[in-house]
Amino acid sequence: MLYLWLKALHIIFVVCWFAGIFYLPRIMVYYAASEHEETRRQLAVMARKLYRFVTPLAAIAIVMGFALIAMNLDYYLAARWLWIKLLAVLCLVVYHFYCGRLVKAINEDTDQHTHIYFRVFNEVPVLFLFLIVILAILKPF
Image (cartoon, rainbow, N blue to C red):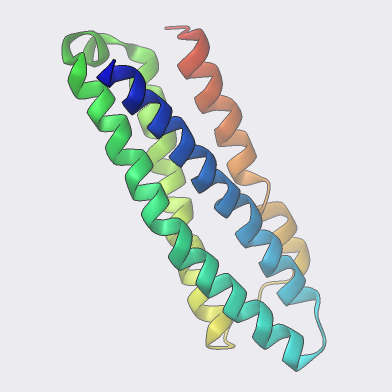
């Protein structure tokens, strides 16, 4: 029963994390496209607050994931699909921290990226979501 609770919590926090990393670059798109200083300031504040909110959710999702692995360590250490999934999660963590750098630059008004850059940047976590879900559900390796 504990395993199922951990799994449910892991999924809930992953969904929350992804909601944040889907919306954060969208705020950046609006920031980069805006020509009004007051709008840009408000979007910068929104980005900062969202990043601060979603970062602990990401950490909890990762902790819950490792707790699940610990509950059946022998199986998971031998599962090749899990290692690929963990590599994808590591890439998402790097993406997340890069978002933090962008949020800082936006709040300092030093970011020079265009809205087109952020539109493309916004699609990156979608690719990782597909990979991670397919690996976790299908366990192909």
